[in-house]
Amino acid sequence: MPWISRGLRNGIVTSTYPRKSDGYGPNFRGTVEANRSRAAIEIKAVIEACPTRAVSARDGTLALDRGKCILCGRCVEMAPEVFAFSPSFAVSARHRRSLVVPPTEEDDGSLTILREELAHRVKRLRRSVHVRHVDAGSDGSDEWEIAALTNPIYDVQRLGIFFTASPRHADLLLVTGVGSLGMIRPLQHTLEVIPRPSVVIAAGVDAISGGMLEESYASSGGVGSLVGVDVFVPGSPATPFGLLHGILMAIDLLPLSTSDSDDGPGVSQGTRRGRHSNE
Ligand code: SF4
Image: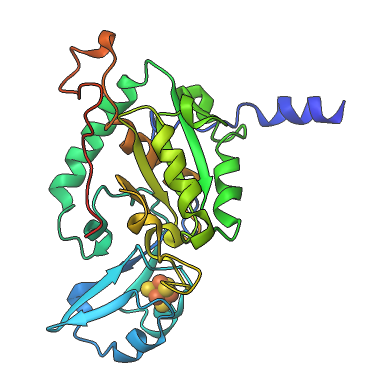
């Protein structure tokens, strides 16, 4: 009985994202922002201290690669005038290079467009979308966040998004892990049997760049060298809202169903759209 009264007291806890903006508290470590205007400050020590070489400076220009950042916080501690944590989770990108901030492509203008497209994508969710997840050498943290997507808070089923055990029923391939050598063939085989056109999401820094392991005797340094990646979801691990943002971005790459054909341009069956290199 106590759980009934607790449920009545708490009411509905399910997030309404993406219909309304939602997210985490102000102290949440969603991503790291770099203040380029303050980059004149000596950051050589930070570059050397960053464990994944996510921070770099070329010709005096500061760059932070979210595809490598494991959110350890060293840069924020050492140079708080330049680096700061942000609770933002909407940092997925369709190009690997767009994860390098300050942004090279996704500036304020394109973010406005992204927000408008998000509303359009939600409208497209009139059919269900099935996701096949493959762990290609993860430490398990990303899997905890993926599992959270199905709990009452995020409840991705409300959006028509389901996880499937069979790649033959999948629209999206969600890959976590560094791309361990033992998982190369299973990963590629999974992609081969997913109906075309399929869309691949690399979730978490490990899947994007190999994280702390980078490329090694047992790791491919990310899954981009094994399969073509369409959407990159940074984070260490990627957060549930970040994953949801990336999945919504990936849905835009799926073909429109017949009933949706008046919503905008789509792709014909068998044609892969939005395939990007990992450059
Ligand atoms: S928080 Fe990210 S960018 Fe900063 S030192 Fe750690 S890994 Fe490098």
